[in-house]
Image 1 (cartoon, each protein chain N blue to C red):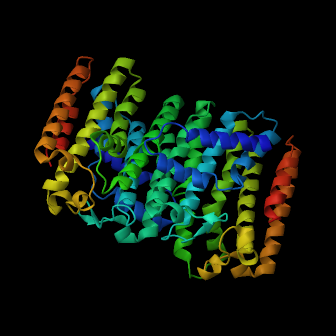
Image 2: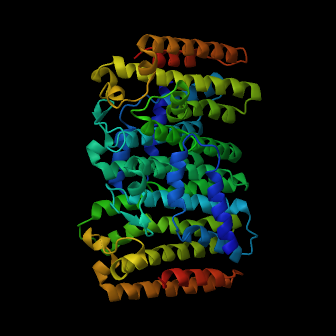
Image 3: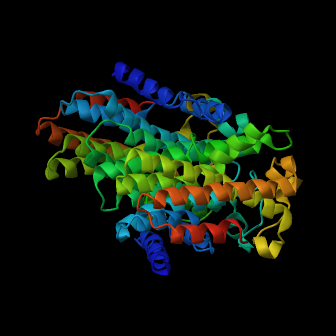
Length: 288
Length: 288
């Protein structure tokens, strides 16, 4: 899978190597694209495709890279002064701290808009591309990530119910983590039952990641986190540890991971080779 | 064509009527979508399709509406304090003045991301949709509008050459005004010669609009403009009147409109009914 990661980096870099009207905009975009993100979302998609026995080509990697572009754009905007106002991300200055606020707004805008060209450039059946375009857009915009981010911004300082907290997470972080599971169903042209299994697995995984992030925000240091810890508490954000306490939040995470394991096992009964995916999830969700 | 406009409004509104995770985000989006924009870009596309004898359906209007969504998102972000810092747009408070900066950033993000779902939802041949997705993305992001906007931001207070000024305009405003001409070629499956004519016509029109906007910024009042005039001069922006003087800028605009007329006439020799398009352009480019 290290090779897949290398192809992913090449695809991302290649998209921004065309002669551009504005090299400084591209420099700002690549600063965040190459900031050492773990590439969780694209790798999940490639894990799934490989697990189902698909020989992965650069064209599949373009779909994965488009997803990473939207994720990266959202991080740049989330860090802006008017939003979470973060100075550090992954141990380096946030985009607006490095390039200024206007440049950071435009870098995020570009990543959102560029992603769909990269997706459309993939040499895959047009009907698949149209389905993926719609799914990626709905997972990202008003009916997905941005909707959740907007809810989250306005809930600061308020007491939320569990349901409200879950709705924020399902959208803000869950939808982009869920996209690989949806995209795999499209690209592999899987049967309804397998798609439903993937769908449920993807949702659980998205939730598990958010609970883990909430826990890490409380327990990890700046060095471990690469950004300022305890931001959630300072911003009075609703989090799992804030609502349930740290121990119960850990219990919820363990239970979600248990469910995820069982669902991968169910997929294995349908011919899926789940070892790589299991390992990836263990490494990400329980480890650092 | 008033009927087309009504269908366009319905399509835009309908997209935002699905149950949303975040009604307040939708309210902010609709505030700007329904702020009385002239719908120039979508109407140009529909003029072109009708002029070539196509019976326009709601599916074509979805393509036009997706374009308008990206244009509207760009206006919201252009007005932000870190960008042009405008308080008024079309005579009403700008989005961030009405809803706050974080909400305005997210409303623009949503419009950029949502546009591609609406486009993908159009019941048109999948190969056309993929081509349109790529074209709309490239016209909007790093290699189009955002690239031009970024150049423009960084050129404030600098002395530009005509070539540099043109490169800004070609990208910042030109590419989205050009998209209808490109999209018409795709949707009508026109021959190469017709596409080239449309291409050149679209580029001239984009430039004409920018020259006109520059002139209006100098000559029009707040009431005529719906926003604060003389912003360009205050921001020391490179404009046609600033570089050429007002009279010569007017001459450049007249010459561009003359070329546009000739190009429409050339299209008419290929069966295009150009009366509606000519009228639209006269009304927009010479009138207020």
